Image (cartoon, rainbow, N blue to C red; front, side):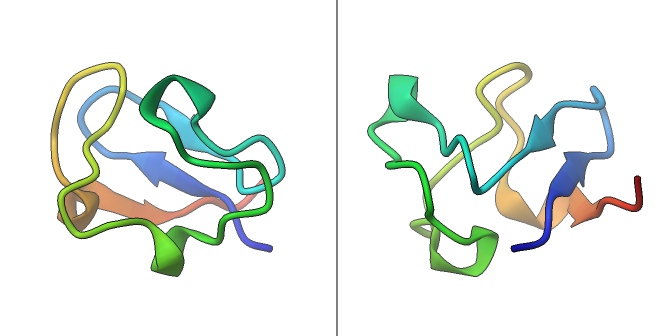
Length: 54
């Protein structure tokens, strides 16, 4: 599964880890995140994320 990076702060959403602090289980693809999910670091919405190329 593809990682995504937050444009404003650089946080990387890794589907293998999920976002446990927000109740997002490991293995949750970025596309499957709830529409109201926000970056846990800076609070922007999913539209501020781009695919991450390692």
